[in-house]
Image (tube, rainbow, N blue to C red):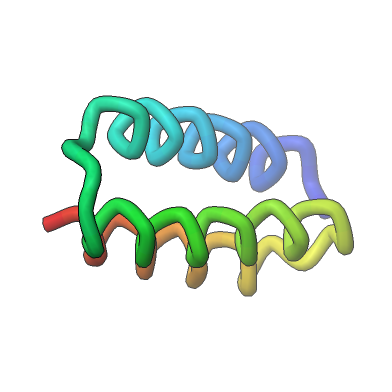
Length: 63
């Protein structure tokens, strides 16, 4: 994993978490949380591609 990908992933994690924190309670927020938790697991496993995929799904769930 390159440092560039890591910082990009870290920034996206932060951005999605901030959006999730501001979202109103409800099914969209719950769905986004599920995807965010999957992103955290992928990040821990150093799987950037899966992490970013889960973050995209979390962002889509909040729309």
